Length: 296
Image (cartoon, rainbow, N blue to C red; front, side):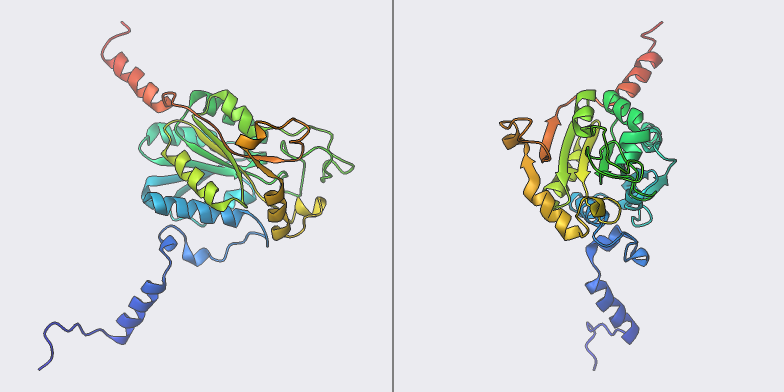
């Protein structure tokens, strides 16, 4: 007699179970049909996508509880089309404005903006500063590759002085913006800065940012061999990562260094963390007070 506890599977069911056992857990967050990515060889955007998916997995965030918002550019491909969560692709420079509306109407969702230095520090710089000032409960991951990568290699607010771009063919004479310090000064609750070489600290920082009430911001120095690297002699991704490694300085060490010693260095780590009340909480508290008639 056959064993009554024996479960008989068809060949198709066995193959399906074997395929599922080999399936990586991050496929719960990523659209497998969109792999491999369209990022250029050596681009750091794939590293950010990897870290972002790992951060969500380790935090146990369900895709349906995450809303990503982005603009236009190479880094805007990080959340879409690769993540299974809802994503808003907005007009250039307006990602934070859209994310603000999402957070006000869906305060229980994790709202994350991922966009580039041109999108967020250039045309969207005003939105960035005032979202930090208001302390809106969104997380912003600014992908800083020092140039407008997708649209032809134009100078951006973070392009180092002296670098040649398509719009500064002789050299850039503008000083770059220290965007993380600007955001910290504007009032964000959490601000950090990392490179794509520092993968594990970056992943931990992403989790800290997404757990933090109020406005959180991470500037991520990212290699772009195609549009930026070839202009500064770093044509391969691994060359740029080595450059990040050799020229990065932790915040604690940088505090004891002069401005001249820090010239050309990447100061990394947590800039600030504080506990100002989050904007949508303040907004709802005000609404409750109005309903109770406190302002009559």
